[in-house]
Length: 282
Image 1 (spheres, rainbow, N blue to C red):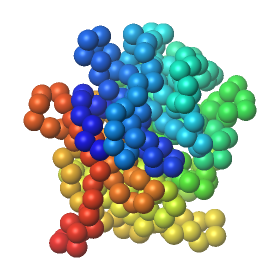
Image 2 (image 1 turned 180 degrees about the vertical axis):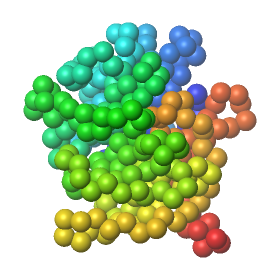
Image 3 (image 1 turned 90 degrees about the vertical axis):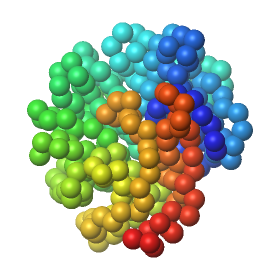
Image 4 (image 1 turned 135 degrees about the horizontal axis):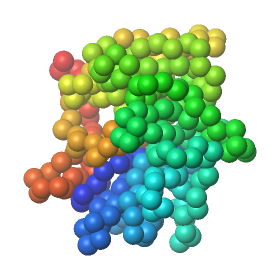
């Protein structure tokens, strides 16, 4: 793609044709939501408020983006139609008084996942908000630890997430939306998990900077997860926030990464090609 700027979070659309990215408006010193064609070409600005937007998450049909915004003071959720010039609408979730950071939108369009909390309380929990009844919003994980990076499996019955319950970030999976079969995926630290589009692999970033992959196999209602293997190392931009993602995976298995370039405070969106060659050399 080659798009460059002060870019933080990125997220690929369900059909793999578009990339949502958060870009700094240097004139106003605020971050806004942009959409870029994966095939290349100019991007299109989606939000224009004098506030910071971040944590973009695509709807299953690719027509809307759920994101977080500070325009009302505390961080709240909002939704915007990417195909029109409409004003973003608040996404009301029944959890007052805490920051809300968008995490995922289930493929069956039944619920969204978000992170509630932040630095003010030195912890965060994962919440699920049913789209048909926001009043039924509830905490999936409610502990004294930091729980973040929630990602729902394509089939909708499992989720991956990151927790620091062992004094360092590790990747876990558990059933969704009712927990009950938790297990650890990463071995020596990790975070920022993402599922492959077919649900057969779970990717994450290791503490050492490798993109990792664990094969996933379904055995009835159970989930069997193989030992993770390193795919390749990439110089990703340091996350602007703990919940910010610097990479995503296209439907064909290519990776889109946000990497720093020489100019201070600037990064470029790049599609990683032929990463399997690096894997073969290991």
